[in-house]
Amino acid sequence: MTFLEDLLNDLPGLVGRMRHHDIRHVTLKDGTSTLALTITANPCQIPQAQPVAPIAKSEDTPVLSPEMGLFRQHGLSDSQTVRAGEIVGFVEAGVLRLAVTATANGTLGRALVGDGSVVGYHDVLFRIHPDG
Image 1 (cartoon, rainbow, N blue to C red):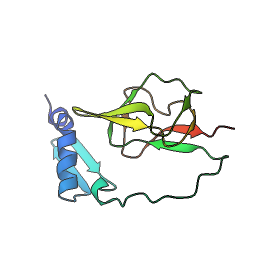
Image 2 (tube, rainbow, N blue to C red; image 1 turned 180 degrees about the horizontal axis):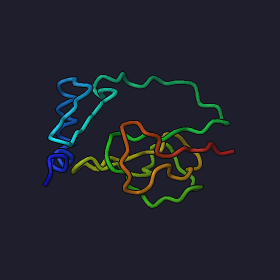
Image 3 (cartoon, helix red, strand yellow; image 1 turned 30 degrees about the vertical axis):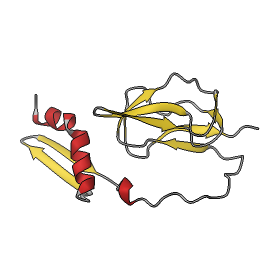
């Protein structure tokens, strides 16, 4: 394996160590290969969400990636009715398979990324259209 292949296989561990030590950016070089990794927020330091007023019915609600990794479909079709908290997909980060859950009740829009695509932390994966 090459330097970058080894590094990509250890990416979840590297990200975990970066978050543990509050490192926001790292650039690794080996000859002609370079990997730059930037983390925008430490989930351990994000304040708990406070209740807010319901989103206006005319707006779509985004469904965000819980972590960087590979997006996996869950077999739901677009235009399917979903309830808040229902699993709509997964993000694989190394050996972890993290659930992507609906953030609101409504109609699931089409996936904005393809199955197996690399996604970043808090990338928008779907939009949920309000019913009515």
